[in-house]
Image (tube, rainbow, N blue to C red; front, top):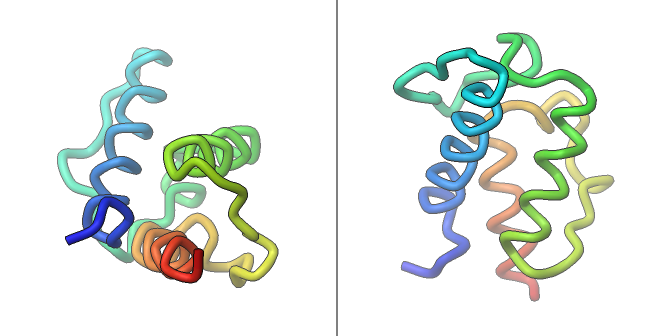
Length: 91
């Protein structure tokens, strides 16, 4: 298993969201399912999405071409983690 496989990226995402919500005095759900939409669920807003994209790039240590991801899937846990993993596999 490499450090950028979708499952490890989901753990990173869950930790990131949990920290952000805790800093706002909010509690994160125990699980973030693959179909969880972070924006529609109110866990992040548009600024939070930008912060999340930056956090993924810092975590992965490189630029990620988020323009290549369908905007409707950008805030959905499963497709987002799968996309980042595939970007890292390309190098």
